[in-house]
Amino acid sequence: MQTKKHSPTRAKKEFAEWASLFAGTLFMKVVAYIDESGRHDRTGKREGSGQIVIAGWVDWKDNWVKFCGQWQSILTKYDADFFHFYEWVEASKVAGGRKPPSSFSENPYKGWKLEKLDGFLYELAELAGAGDKIFVGSFISTRDFAEAKKHPAYSRFATAQDPYRACLNGLFESFAVEVQQQWPYWNEPVAFFFDHNDDPEWNHAVHDAFHASKKNESRMAGAELSFVDGKIPPHLPLQAADMIAYRMRQIAGKFTDPKIFPNPTKLDDLLIKPSFLRATPASLQGARMGYPSLLSLRYGNYPWRK
Image (cartoon, rainbow, N blue to C red; front, side, top):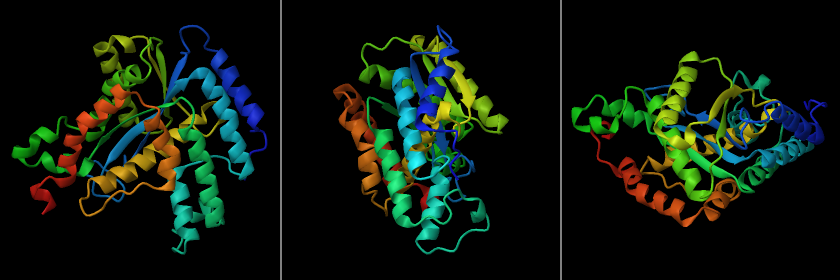
């Protein structure tokens, strides 16, 4: 299954060569790779759509060069072309005894045993969570958002016509604040990379939120935005963004259900915990201040949850 031409050394070289094409102001020193999870039903009723999470990692360009080689080394070790969390989850369920879905013949991890699947995930997660990366993200409880729009007394929870646009606005609005808190001397423009897709409505929403943030936040003035293919070596960090977005969506789903307590897992210890440990006091204080609003999502006595 491994594409032989994608060696770790070549992955590093391809990222470096690609970045060099944009020397100067077009390719920034700071690069953010962003992905989303749960974007397949605006009513939040379909499985996995109750919450949308848009999240990813921010790091210096030179660090991403090294990261690409390390990520590719793990893909090569496990004879994998790429990492995609949704397909990994399906393969893990089947390896655990669940009946394969009709599309499973196309799963890149079909035939893998649980031990191999877990080893693959944990090695990639440890790399994604390590280093100086900053985790950034935003989420909307899509199900609650959609229901709140039907109840005038709770319309304050539906701050826009569309939950996906609201989540995108939240991501870009908080981005500059989060990065400034953790990198106090940050003043370089940022290149944002989202995963390429065939949904023009989503792409338009991304561009709208991005340009709005550039108008409202001076530190975003020189930022750039592109859609790229996360399966090819220059953009392997998008696979790490897919991992954090999918995992945070899983956690959000449990957090908004008061009957479930989202206990941390080994994956969380490798992927998420390190970013909190290296966060600045200002960043942690901001997270604590926002926590009460999250509690209302978990324990709110809303009529649609009866």
